Amino acid sequence: MRNFYKIILFFLFLIQINTVFPASGKIEGTWQYGLTVDGSPVGGLLVDIKKDKNEYLTSTEMTVTSGSDVTIIKYFHRETLEFKPVKSTSIITTVRGDNVVKRDILTAEFKGRRVVVTQGAIRNEYSFEEDFYISGNILTMKFIRQGMKTGLKGKIKYYSPENDPAVLIDLEEEIVGVETADVMGEKLELIHSVQKTGNDSIIDNYTDKNGVLFKSVFEMNGSSYVLVRIR
Image 1: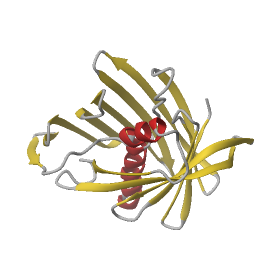
Image 2: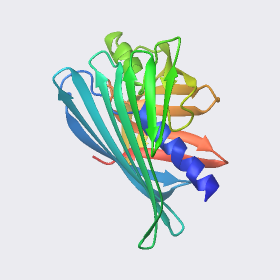
Image 3: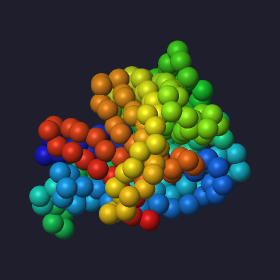
Image 4: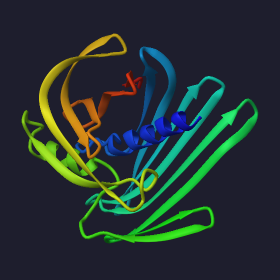
């Protein structure tokens, strides 16, 4: 169960930094993804984005099955139009049969470089010396504004209180080029970018010119995990 929960936290991290963000054209929308591990389906992801006055509101829900355990990850975050963090909430629920065996609810509220993290009755405040973000949207927007050209690079400090509320993570991304990717049996010409985090995790993403994620591939514990857009 412990190793499975670590994988769940990584899934949460993955969907945080890879939130779909169509920076040109239609801002609001809903996207659905399937998740496979070594080619076998194990769950799915639903992403919904809305623009509310001066904020982007993003909600994601991922369901992952492992043996008799089903884990539902719900993540909600608010960002300003400049992608500064406002508030995030994660709810991770693991169900076995008809019984809820684990539920974690964590909320982070941001004021500049300060953050208050609440989990149950525990409340802690953290301060950082650098600006940070709770999604990879700032990099996506930067790349789109520069034409999604091969060789573009970006780096930010990323914050994930579910992983470690006291630490900022280096997140780097580089556009490798246009490649043909298999998406649900269809061959699509997509922009391949590579993300690297502070712990040297490498994630291969395939998006269209508007920054919409169609496919994400990463390796962990000797297995291959793939998110693929269904609709």
